[in-house]
Length: 93
Image (tube, rainbow, N blue to C red):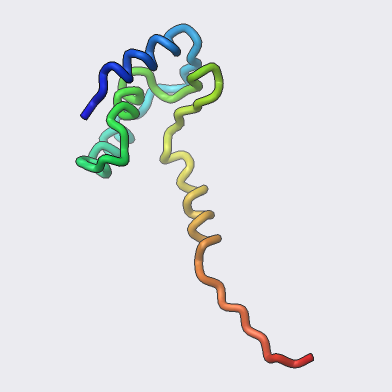
């Protein structure tokens, strides 16, 4: 459920200070709408910001909203770090 009161407060705080870096591509918006459709842990407010304000720096520099697809390499790296590792030894001293 989209909370317009929350969105309005966000707009009021940021309308004169945010720095827009780029529009959010429609393909990215649609991808995440479909991926998280009906999931309560992905805020619809974020989709609204992508659609209406784009990617950029908000909240006087304390929040940067980015294209998540540009950071997939980070998640791949973290997945590699979290892979189980087998360490063996022969017990010789």
